Amino acid sequence: MADYTTDSRDIKSLLASTVENTLNSSVVQDAIFDATPLLNRLKAGGQLKVVDGGERLRIPVDYAKNSTAKYYNDLEALDVNRSDTQTSAFYSWKQASASVVVSGREMRVNKNSKTKLFDLLTARMNNAAKSLSDLCATGIFSDGTGSASKQITGLEAIIETVPGTSSYASIPTSNTAWRNQVATSVGAAAVNLVPQLRTVTNNCSQGGEGADSSPNLYVGTRSIHESYEALMFPMVRYEQNPSGGADAGINVLKFKGQDFIWTDYCTSGTVYVLNLNHLYMFVHGDANFSKSSEGMQKPINQDSMVTQILFMGNMLCDNRRKQGKLVGVT
Image (cartoon, rainbow, N blue to C red; front, side, top):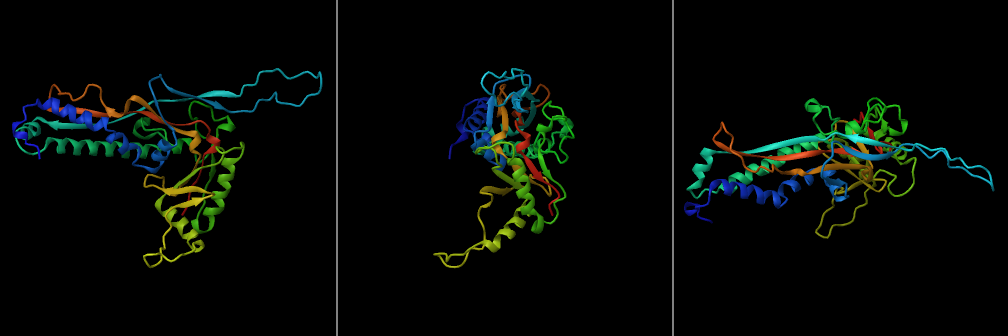
């Protein structure tokens, strides 16, 4: 164990370097992105995008077919009218932070003793990371109206219960191609879950062929996940475990070959039918769950040292038709 009674380093430098080392080792970023199944899947699938700026986030969207596509014969005149098939979706930056504070008293108490200041600061850094993780994980399942509309514009905004109710990403509600799929008032999972999952999945798959056309992740609450496991349970075939006994659980649930997972952050009574190829998390490179560029600062009116872990970004969707949900599942 190091002996800090003879440590002559300046306490502010020690604090700053400890924070810097913690963040540079990706401890905070990993705590955020690996903490929730959906963020983890977006990260693993390359859907986490780090960008450098812009007044707003902007991505192109196809919303219509080219109307000039036609058969013709010999010298028949071709249709050369311009088809407007694309528009831009705009998303506002959303910001969040968690502060790490060490008082002057704590610094002085720890400076000349064997009590590790590293432990104190690391514990607070980890707690701040978990708190920010919880805030953002809640946001990705929200409609973005929380905290006076400063919250992440999450799945409840992307996948409306009544499609066409609210404008999303500055695209008007009149654009019917910019509407998600939904099954409402599903009711008892034991009876209706599988048929409704099948219908919403097929609706999300319609309108395009290829590997990226169909949903590739199902996310529900724990109770719905357990109901689905109960439905699958009679289909399980048992083999004798080499260590003895029978295993009555199902480690990985799937629907149409894709994972069906649960999370505490999921909206009650809801199953999200997601195509992750069209969902993104955009984060600014200077606020990617990273320390404020000013480092540890001393407030003018307080005996302490303070820094923040910052987030600036948002959740984006470039094809709402490929996203769906079931609501009212009991």
